[in-house]
Image 1 (spheres, helix red, strand yellow):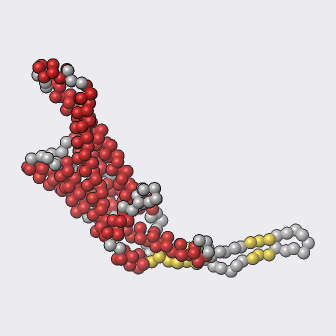
Image 2 (cartoon, one colour; image 1 turned 180 degrees about the horizontal axis):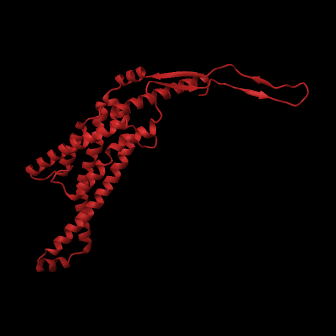
Image 3 (spheres, one colour; image 1 turned 45 degrees about the vertical axis):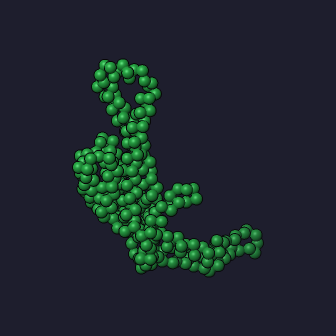
Length: 278
């Protein structure tokens, strides 16, 4: 699944990220759009039904029932309304919706929240892996030193070695950060803009991610790294699209559910205004 010219931190991070990619869309479907039907979706509210009963044991008092006579009102959100709203929505509108921020400066859309959580965890994991790798490299370089170099090294401060390890880890982490951002955000942004789940967004994003990892290498290995990333992304994207479609969480289905939920909320607000609740 990963090209030959990738180091161990990149391979481990690739496995961690790719194993969670398909859960990004599934999360929003299972939490936000649960219980949605397929044909007609009714928004129902009681129009001020006020049923009261009075009962008294005093002489001459009888139980009486007062009803205002209003019946429940129903406004349906149909598939035609949803499809019309989707046709009016552009790719830029979906991108703005995807990266919209709330009052707390957090992403509003659940998909983007999940992607961001995976991104932060992957960056932290990548930094730790690069620290271990840099420490191992520094340890091997000390073992391979000549006696004269070892004597000169003894005079150096141990703090210098620690700083060198952190610097090397930071360099590797920057590449892995670009790798993870391309793999997560770019793939989902392409899918949201096109409103379609396909292998292309995974292939393109993975190729660019591997280009970030292989940046600075000679042309031959760099090209092989990018091509390997494109092929791995296409294979992984094919499996991801199949899994997303099987659980009803493809980009098209998520957009359909999101628009339907927004229309239902609008209908609910209209009913509340008519009832004098707001």
